[in-house]
Image (cartoon, rainbow, N blue to C red; front, top):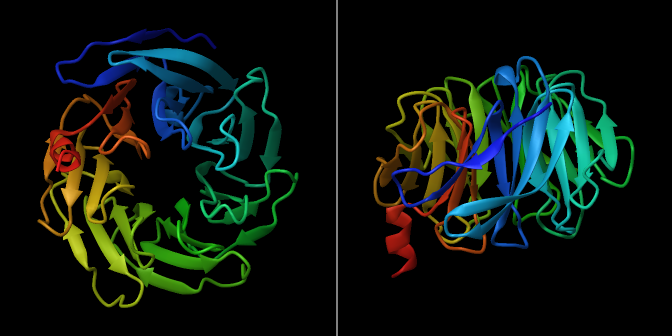
Length: 332
């Protein structure tokens, strides 16, 4: 599968790159480096064809350098870096497989993990560093727990009645993770107790597409749904959301809390926008960025540079930029 790769200038002050012949689904910034990211892509909207991982370095203020690319026979829907090794990443594909790749050996995956019966749509590496475990969420309605050094999963978590879009580790509490599903619920799990979720709550009257833990409060999460809403939840009191952000015209594909500010979030949506939010200030977006001409699918904050965001969309563009609203915060 051949792809061309080139810079594309834009009217905004960001860095952007065009990956032709593929559609980006996910972008992840390297935890231990401020200038490296990886993008998971698919052909034909993820319905047919193969997928490619692009590992890119931001080499100046206006260009990327391709470090490596990895080809796979099915579409790639998500990717995340290892928390313990800056050269290792794990990707999720439409054939139900998790791939562990080594940046230094791009010809084939270092390991293939296959147990899911349908597409794997989300992967996440544990963040507490007390354990090196990976979560995979699948359209077969299950979540699996993996030790990357082993060839079979450690546990399977069942309970969602529809496909699971996202499962994310708590950055604060070891063995704790959240999952969201097309059944409109969010579940909180103890990875040591796979038999039943610790908590289950209905968070949207629609499919729930992703969740994110607040980096400064272990009890706060955000969810986003196909109803275009972003809602915040406090695990100590779940009767009502603690905030609700409005403004997206279509489904919100991803939401993520800032690693630098308690109340700041970013989101990407099928309405072609990337938005920044401050849930303490307003229910409306602080800023709306319209540099994509198609669905925006992938989103990640840079842990090393305050306010910097990477996003990617179905116009085959990756952008790395700092919204003006977050620039003003970092200068305070």
